[in-house]
Length: 208
Image: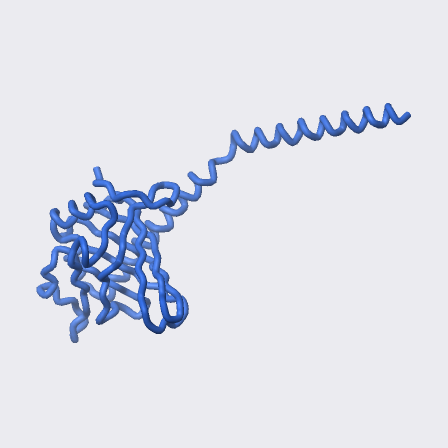
């Protein structure tokens, strides 16, 4: 009796193991790899937010549209989040667009010292006015504002427009919150690195 019971138990165990294996095999052959799926979703999210950030920029500074249209490239970080109390750190993902086409995805990070009022979100947009400035960015192995290029941060004038004549540097930066363009800010020390499809930082490579 004990032998028969043991035999039945072993049979049930083998059957359960085979069923589990079959289900696992099916899942492996029909499910998109998680890393690939998250990469696609991440890019889609960045693109949607980048579109919204540019639309918002044109609303708060209408003449910025001309600057962006004439640029050799535009690097858009639609959501840069920072937090902390005394020492703050900021991070966000963005997309580089050349001729209206997506040419690569990037991450940005920076640190700041001073009182921080909890988590804060803003958009940062770098406009590369010259081909030389864009090529230098693409050729760099990690790019830092203020080190690899001087970045002129745009501010609104009293009449609510950006004085484009004062922005003579080859790279122009816009920093924007829900309230509009931020005044009196600096992007010096802001670091940018290219990210691959898995979300890992990689050396910046020239777009093809």
